[in-house]
Structure formats: C-alpha cells, structure tokens
Amino acid sequence: MDVEDREENIHQTYLALRVAMVMLVAMLFLAILLQLWFVNGGQCWQTSISAYYFTSVRPVFVCVLCAIGACMIVYRGNTDYENTALDYSGFLAFIVAFVPTKIDDACLPVNGPDRPEIEAAVKTNVGALLVIGVAATIVGLIARRLRHGQLESPSLYTVVSLLVTLAVLLFGIWLYWNERNWFLDHGHIYAAVPLFIGIIVVVLANAWTAPQGKFTIWYIAVAIAMIVSLLAGGILWRMGVQHWALWLEALIIFWYAVFWVVQTAELRGATNRAQVG
Image 1 (spheres, rainbow, N blue to C red):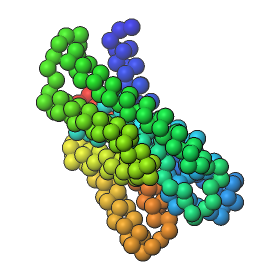
Image 2 (image 1 turned 180 degrees about the vertical axis):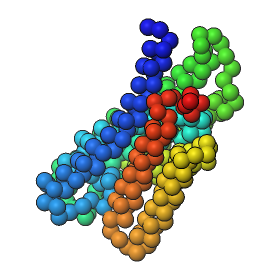
Image 3 (image 1 turned 45 degrees about the vertical axis):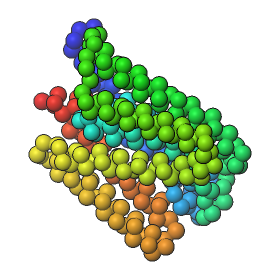
C-alpha cells in the first residue's frame, strides 16, 4: 500500500468516526420517539433522557452512550485542549451509561431493573471501566514516550494531563470501593454534568480557534445556541416545568450534533485543520 492509499484510509476512518457519532445521536432520539409512540401511545414523556434507561429504550441508550464515548476518546481533536475535553467527556459517557439516574415518577418504568440488579451491574461494569481507565492512561503515557519507534520526551501538557487523569481515576476507584451507596445515588449526575460541560467546551474552543471564515460563524452560532439553551433550561427549572431537563439535554445534544456536522464539513475528511488545503 503506497503513501496516498494509507493517507486516504486514515481520512476515511476519521470521516467514518465523525459520521458514526451523528448517526448514533439520531438513533437515540428515534428510539425515544418510537418508545413514546408504540409503548406509551404518545401520552407520556420521561423527564430526562437518562430516565429512558428504565424503559424499553435502555439497550439503545446504553449502547449509544458507550459507542459515542469510545468515538470521542479515539478521535484526536484539533488541539491538545480540545482532545482532552473529548477524552474526558467520552470516558464520562460510560459512567452515565453504567450508573443510572433515579427512577422517573413522571411515567411508570416499563421494564427497568430493581435496586439489587442495578447494584450488581454497577459493581461489575464500573469496576472494570475504572481499572481499564487506569491501564489505558499508563499505556498512553508509555506510548507517547515511544512515539515513532524511539524514546521521546512527551510535552509538559501531556505529562500533567495524564497524571491528573490518573489521579482522578484513582480517586474514582476509592470512591467506588468505599462509598458505593453514594456512587449509586449520585454517580450519574456527577458524570453527566461535566460530560455536557466538556462538549460545550469543545464547541467554544472551536469558535475561538477556528480560522476566520464561514465555519467560524457557524461555530459561534452553535456556541451561542448552547448558551441560550442553558439559560432557557435554567428558566424552565426555576418555573417548575417538569420536563426541563429533557428539553435541555435534547437541545445540547442536538446542537453538539450540528457542531459535529459543521466541523466535518470544514475538515472534509482530514484529521485536523492543518491538513485542510
């Protein structure tokens, strides 16, 4: 295989990763709509997307979050800061998938697991995730020192970010091992909030660093839309609107999908902006 073929394969892989994330988001939204139509007869919405864990949407919910999380971790961002935000958000997506939120009282659960089943699932799945997270961080540090088949000194940012990641993971293991009930009750929300913050940071970073042009305008527009959505969600929450979290989550995810489409159009299959001619 010559150099051009290898480059084309790399570009096609990056493009496939980007398209896959948009398709995964669409599948989750479609599953929620189909559940509403076929199961609830169009009568009852859960008050958050996470609450659909306790409905027939659960397999899609868990699979989509894990798949998107893996794609975000694998994908290399345009800058170190963007890449770090993608990695952290991607890892947190697994926590959000494995540690369910509280059962929603807006609609009765369709086929949700009981507390003992959830405890067993969290004990098994989150434990494996945290251990693999530590192993992956160590492997990442070693790989950066052996880049291009020779010993190299990674940048200060790389070393610090990996050490911080390792410290956070070790704290997570301690919390998981010693505060299991707290982890079960609060792990979902404490992972979901920084997950959404991370994807907003990615959008803001692109609005700030992208070269001047039509794509920059799109990035700024999406960033503004996200901020407006956050403000609207806060207003709905203060007003006591029951489904404020559902609409806020749906809007943030939708705008992130729009951002991803815009960035895909800008990069045109390239791995980063430096390769765009």
